[in-house]
Image (cartoon, rainbow, N blue to C red; front, side, top):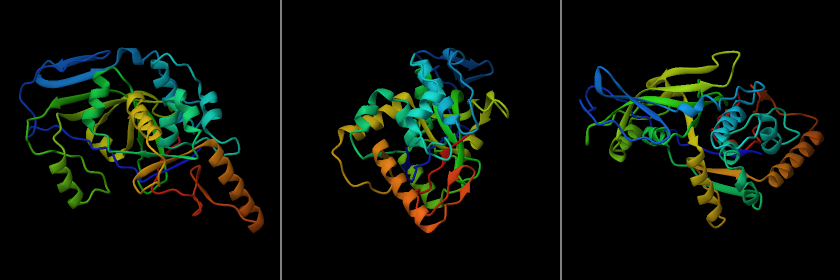
Length: 307
């Protein structure tokens, strides 16, 4: 299974002394624990107590996406291990078990897979997820998946689970402190200032890294670094919303900025055609960190969370 996209990067709003309230009421939560900082009446940390029983470390170097998906599904009492997820969502003749955000969206909703496979291509509209949406998900007790990319020129990333955050409530109408990634222009930043009126600003997040041999386990990440590396954010609810919207929409032409998720049937057909071309030419495509870098691949700035 494959997907192609120009991914709209998440919009991460930062908290600082100029844009935050001095005092704020503790936000309501359901399934999460919110603690106010003893020395700061507008600094809150949200954590999800049920998360610890759900964490899964990845079984191989390229199954970080499957480990994170397994973790989120376990929180909903859906038990699919990484072997089953890879068998379901990675083509059997694939060179590795990497996957992109389209696969993650589908894997988080296995009950919708039959509907997806009734079409050759499912065009999914991806809107930029904001840090407000992330905090809302966490306050509702829902874990999230983030695809982190240290080098945006590379075509490889690493999926982790977001399990908590520290944040403050912002002033209404205050200048928005949007954390800028390396590919954000001054014009884009100005447009974002007028487009968003966030409720919360981030200080840091807590992630569960499924790569046990390196920095595995739960660790903090400051909001600035998080904003620079976050390529996509989703949860079961966020993924389900966009997938259902796509399935209920009439089939149409996939436009730039949309995610083209292909059915197993369509992927198998394309891979068979690609093998035929390679056999006739006597060559094969190069690989970079486990991701096919052939120019024939329809890959518009996609970053694969590989592990």
